[in-house]
Length: 130
Image (tube, rainbow, N blue to C red; front, side, top):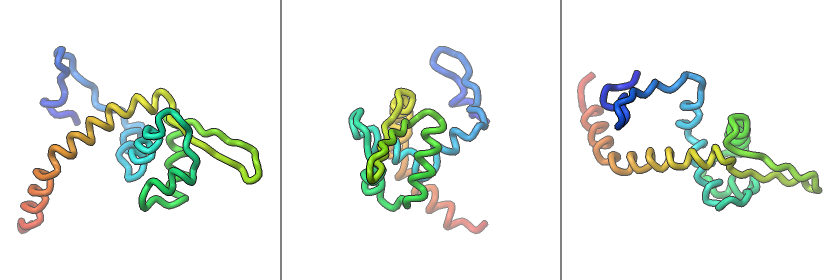
C-alpha cells in the first residue's frame, strides 16, 4: 500500500503502487544493489566474474552467479562469454541497469540520512515489553 505522503507527485498525479512481479524483491535483496554498484564503478568497462567476486565482501560464488543471472534475465546486465582456454566471462550494466543508479543513490542517501533515527527506533522497540 502507498502512503498518502508518498502517493502524490509534485504535479498532483498519483503514483501507482509497484507491481508485484518480483522486481522490488530482487532490488532489495542483499546482493543485487552491490553488484550494480560495482559494475557502475567500472565506468562502462566490463568486469570479470572473479573481479566482482573479490570486490563484493562476503558474497559466495553461487550467490554471485544467481544474482548475475537474475540481473541478466531482467535486462539490467549483459554477459559476455569468450570461448578461450580457460573460458572468460565478463559483465557490464545495460543502459537500463545504469538508469537504476539514480534510484539506488536516492535510497542510499535516504538510508545514510535516517540510519541514526532508525537505530534509535530499533533500540526503543527492542526495550519494549511485547
